[in-house]
Length: 70
Image 1 (cartoon, rainbow, N blue to C red):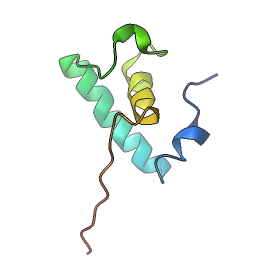
Image 2: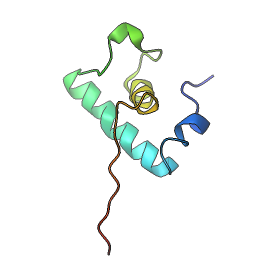
Image 3: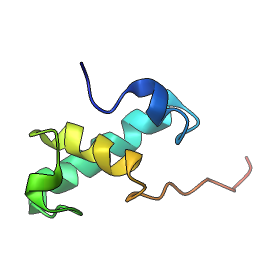
């Protein structure tokens, strides 16, 4: 089973595309600088993408809404 579940994450983020974008950026940051927002043993996932999704679920990543209009 994948953790965290996509259904739970979509209650936090309004779009699956936005979720993919945010998780992708955060996982690259983790890979590049190794900075984690929780202790390493507190994560369930071992890979960067899973850890990024866990951070979204735990509210450690704030997603800014784009307020600019075209």
